[in-house]
Length: 175
Length: 180
Image (cartoon, rainbow over all chains, first blue to last red; front, side, top):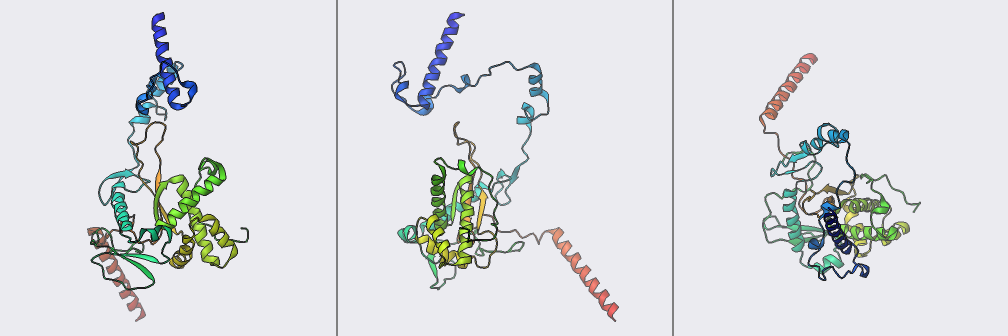
């Protein structure tokens, strides 16, 4: 029994030293026994389950509440109830949380905006001496505009089908 | 500062504690807001952490509102512009692009939408973060919220429209009969 305890103590102390070495990398924690090279931060991390064990025995009442009750601390309440805040996107059908926008649709928009920004011819002008005019992006199919008050940037691709020309629609209008 | 006054801002004010926005106190917080403001005015659509970006949204609204009210020959507004905008070419953009663009709009000049949280990517000490998209209104890029749908051809809507038309014609006929 004593040997078992000592082995357990040594194991825990080794883990703790490694853990502290990862957190506070200072010369005071440079022990001789520790391995000299740390391969990756993940491998140097200890098994966290040792640090998170429970200290005191829970009473029978608390255990029963945890198992069977309807309180939010109950396991069945916490993990077993289905989520009600998931919505399906009307455009593509992927699931997303109620408070957020659809991620699948937004990826498409983000790529298109990045492509539009990249098609701007003079990037130094865009980043350091920004044009003091409205920037208008004209696709291949669109009718061409001649206006000196606007900065016109031509894109050689065709306009995507989902990108409507009417950028400022009123609410509750039909297409 | 006290001489300058605007309407109340039409954006939601975040409840996060402002001193905990960044490490390093008030000057670090100001610098963070300045960089995000410059990014927003230049690119017109940015992504980032909700705390910092929702905070800078108010500053952008306030600067545009002051620029609309007082113009570019007012001392106080120009001092504020000089303080909050690091790249000086963007001060010209505020007066020459944003002010004429938003002359007729009353409400907020920016939009913000919550992005989906990537739960799987974060390891233990880093918690999953809520990011948002901030954008100026009426920008040339494709809209984030999709086009409004056309529901008028659904069968129930067609029947309701027809019923409404019949009801109106009946009412008109009755009124004409009464007048006679």
